[in-house]
Length: 107
Image 1 (cartoon, one colour):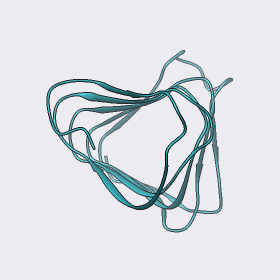
Image 2: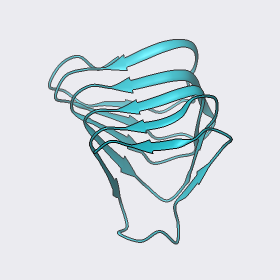
Image 3: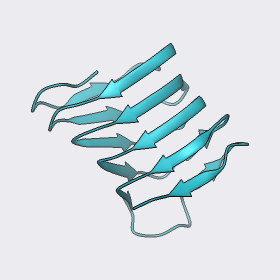
Image 4: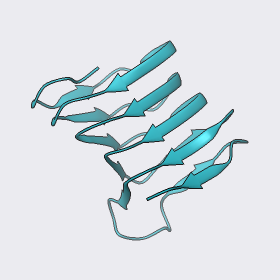
């Protein structure tokens, strides 16, 4: 998805029924609610969630995730965190992790 050092902002809600890798030093920004993916693997750089996103199969983080004030829904195999997850507003009050998948933290 983002393989270079540049940032990519998704201003319309993408829907992907495939595994989507996030590689490279850039930032992948989810700016619109309604995005849905089967699977996203963050290998390098940053994935920033400024709007609600749903992952139907799995979300794997081996780099940096930044959560804005929204709901992140993870179903299926759940969240496999191997690095860092930061809250944009430094509180949990405006952030929600939802879904029926488990959360595994290997950081």
